[in-house]
Image (cartoon, rainbow, N blue to C red; front, top):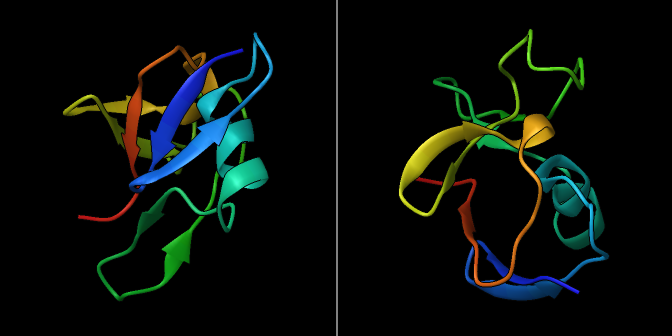
Amino acid sequence: MPDLQLDGRPLRVAPGTTVAAALALGGDGSSRTSVNGQRRAPLCGMGVCQECRVTIDGMRRLACQTLCRDGMQVQTRP
């Protein structure tokens, strides 16, 4: 089972879990904050809308297309 950090909090998920699913399981379901300060969440689930962008191990990635792995650091806030 992958153990990762979600906004500094530990989270264990089942193998094959996407980061987008981990956001729903271990957080508030949000992936980022808009320029207006509103929290945004994944929408399409297939990488088209770009609403699920998070920082994973220092790089911006799409949460819906990224599988969780052990030791991963996920940040949804700047």
